[in-house]
Image (tube, helix red, strand yellow):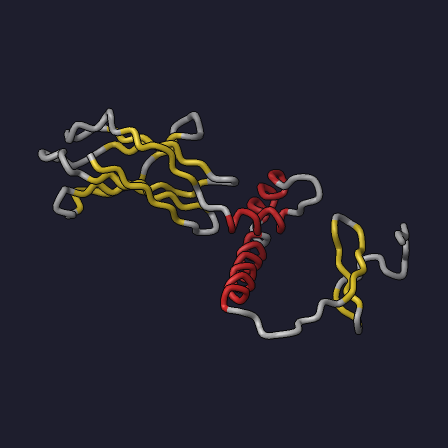
Length: 184
């Protein structure tokens, strides 16, 4: 049974005896209190912990007015800024193919990769390693005007390109880190 404009339950949230009150999309939802019948498995506890971390991130994000508004603008119908921040916590950035055609081992060579996220890519770092594993150089890539590709311009000469490993590391606002490596 659905009741509209019920002043007795408007704005309620929490638990009372066997009843749970929740707010969803501006409405008060009444539900039966869930029962925990046995101890959680390790996998279940991991899920609970992950959601706790996501909620903590979202709560912190809501204290930044600009970030809260950005999440609200990205939220779909029925989602709050908080909900959108939780979703962002669980979705890591995606790194496309690494384009090394502009890199020839000379200073000023370019490396490109398409890096996307469901909300926003916070930073992209590039690491160039020799075949031996020694770091030749590393630095921050720059977002190109198209809003999709990140470019790194090399600052150190590399005389032995064969076996060089190019690594792109992308991080989003919640701190999800993804790495993609291409060996030349």
